[in-house]
Length: 174
Image (cartoon, rainbow, N blue to C red; front, side, top):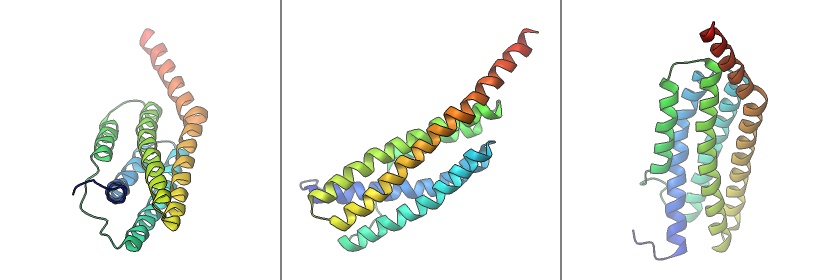
């Protein structure tokens, strides 16, 4: 497809997001299963439910556009999911691994925030008011997910990882 109009770019970016969200539908349960922190597990399970709604919103937008949402692979998300999967295979202290999983999840959230912000702007410029509102709702949820991860990292997971690292260091020196 030739990207010669903002409308075409908009549809292509929506397809990219649709594929990205569908990749996350497969990745989030694995992340939830891998973490040791119950709060983090709950956050991933909540975000899985939100991701299902994100896919539905995108399908609604595609229906309004009379376009097919399929046909594009989001290579950016594929790389982020692969990178996150590497952490899931690692061995180590549970809280340190949880901290690594948060890093991977926040990379995903930042990617989604950038993508949804762009397509929301395109929708507004193209007069797609309903789509812009749906995309803004998803963008708000992605931002909230990122803030939740920030909070869990700062108040629970990273301090626990630090404690485990310090304890491991003490036991190695004795």
